[in-house]
Length: 471
Image (cartoon, rainbow, N blue to C red; front, top):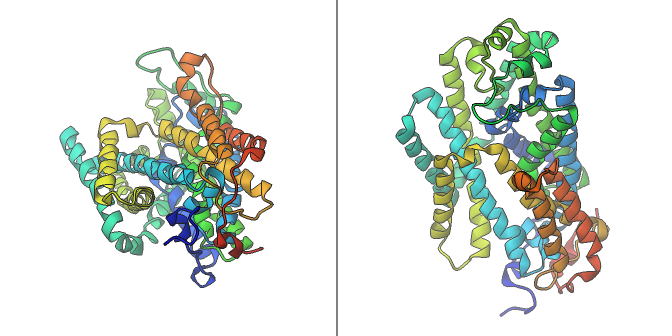
């Protein structure tokens, strides 16, 4: 029988992660986050924007500077304070989030939403991995669909049954994309001094349909970097609460984020920028520009850089294999979220439905529009990160405990932030587009939560809230 009828059973059963189970930042937070950013879909599409010259249209310096700002924003804005909540309480996101969205509302935000969006990540992973393997095997349309079905299904099965085996080798697999990036930078570094962003933009072929796009200005590059990087990181930023539960103290939280988030983002996307610029500054790249054969994806350029299609195919296959643990882990997060919010539903059924949707998105090619996916994720979780961050500030760093029912301050801040975050998807109807929408959604979510802070539902009696660290 419940000892506190006001608190749902999922909150009563939560136990803080004990100090004995925590570890230094370089053993958990930093390597885990770094592995996320080494995922080839993240860095391989970073330079592409759908405009002439992509992120390099205003030069290497502007591109790198934009990435640096986005990387620091991910650490200080989206990760750090939520992670501090996790470190102080030892409690995971779906528990800590109950102070922002209410004991009842916390089931849906961030709990259930986190699970749904992880199936979106599974779709992107499935699509990207299948396309990478296709470079080696040339499956054809039917074969490619079969690979996507098998890949997505295997990831969900592993998440529900065998994730502990995947975790054993996933620690070392990120070394493969890291080594490939280093090799590509080394091969192309000689051309950096001769790179001409105007020549790259001018050589980009006009689109098959519609009016030709213009190169991005320096501000456009900056806005794209924020949209792409923050959109990708938004759910991982909220999951900083979970990462924080494994941190021993404030220093572990800070160092884990600085190295695992900020530095990892800057180095991986920075490497992609240098690879593409270096290639088009070299002899072979200039010849490609003269012929109009412009490709901004460093992964697609591997054959030209190594002057061997065979080497490129093997490297693409290796990158695909290294992505499987990521598919398993996002499936695990989805499974845990859905099992928590729908405890009476067989997880094989609920996760099976999510898996089917993810595979359908991959086969249809919708998941291949990664930039649009990242923007939607940022719109969904940007205001969540903003509200949790503001909750930390308003409570002066001490988690209050769950609030009753649906907390209006959290829900209204999320709704307004989400609408702003997805606005660019309707730019044609609106006649304008909000730049860096995931960041604006974060700011609006935080601001609205602060404005409505006097409209919060009562804090429930919750002994676990009294056990948090004062550090």
